[in-house]
Length: 89
Image 1 (cartoon, rainbow, N blue to C red):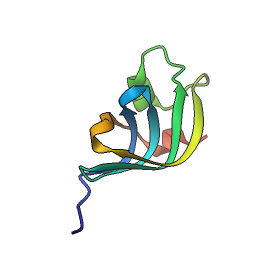
Image 2: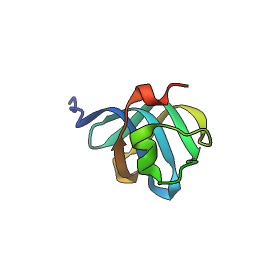
Image 3: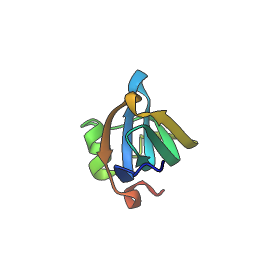
Image 4: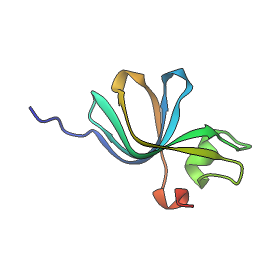
């Protein structure tokens, strides 16, 4: 049976155990798949994760390419909408 996506778009995904990714998200309620994902290893902000969501990465932000990340929905702590254009370097 095909499941419908309940969220699709570019977002920052906070997972349990402190993992934070940014990328194209498809969340169907059971799995959260992040394509073209980057792990946000160091935020480099003065105003927290919300600053990254609103403004994109700073000069101090450290990103590590991660390919495609698949996480069970139960591991998702929060999703912050952001704009892909702000993340292209």
